[in-house]
Length: 154
Image (cartoon, rainbow, N blue to C red; front, side, top):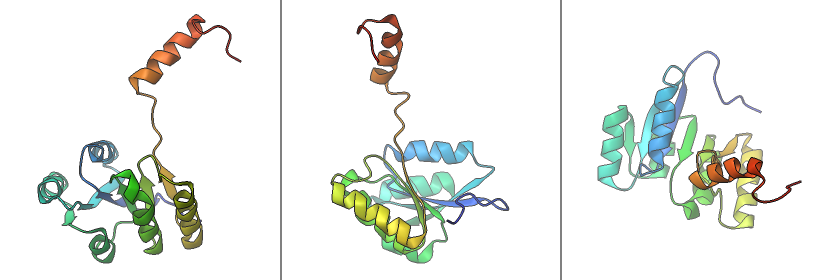
């Protein structure tokens, strides 16, 4: 398996989908600016695309296919609507890229299986964001469990 984080240089990241959730990915890249460069952004909305390009000095693409042809990004963060994740991720794997996809990775079991198979075949890595630690409902639940409000939980 190919290592995802280069030891000798900065990782080249592309962010596809420059809406609300992409902000978290931009923040994470900024937090790790010593190791990550956002080299490409992609969004069909020209305003979102240009805003992201201006903020990052990254190349801007309207279409994922164009990004995959013209960008040297090694890791693609898919911040697009859930229904697009399978087809986009598979295209990225076939283009030799690693992918971080937002949850859910797929809305149908078979699509998820196809994604995993594509990444196995391409010897690339697929990461799925499933971060809910800061979700207020889950934090409340975590605080309530020790108080035994729910009775004994085994």
